[in-house]
Image (cartoon, rainbow, N blue to C red; front, side, top):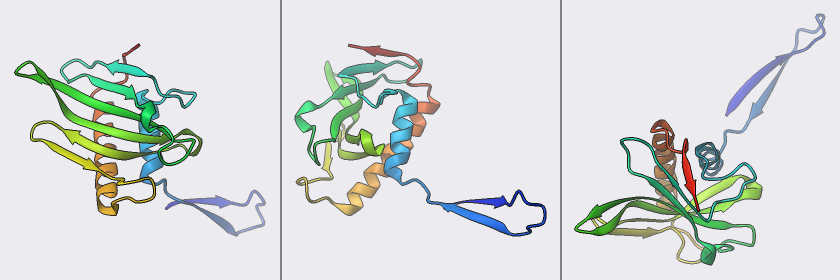
Length: 162
C-alpha cells in the first residue's frame, strides 16, 4: 500500500488526513512496463509485427495473435513476445510468451510460456474459465522481471515495425 499524508491548509487545524492508495497489481505493473518499452502503443494498440534491436542483446520480436483475441472476452487482445537464436540453422525461442492484454483495464497477463532448448511449454489457461493459480503467479512474475531487464537493456529505443 502507498500512503500519503496531507495536512490541512487551515493553520488552526492540526489534523492530518491519510490517504491510502492500493498498490498496483502485477497485471497493471506489467502493462505499464510494456507501454514504457513501446510494445503497447500510446493509444493502447499492439503492432501486428515489431522488432526491437539493442546492441549486444538478442532482438525482441512482438507479433499480434488475432486468433486468440477475445479469449477471455471481447476486449482482450493477444500477442507474443520472444527472443530467437539460431541453432543448426533452426530458429529457437528463448523465451516466447503469449500475453493477453485488456487495454481498457490497463492490464496484461501471461497466457503461455515456451522455450525450445530445453523444450518446455506451459499454458496458464486450459480454457477461458479456468487457470492454474501457481503457474499464473510464476509466469506473470517472470514477465515482470523480463520486462525490467528489457528496459534496462535499452530495448524499445528502436522498433522496426511491419
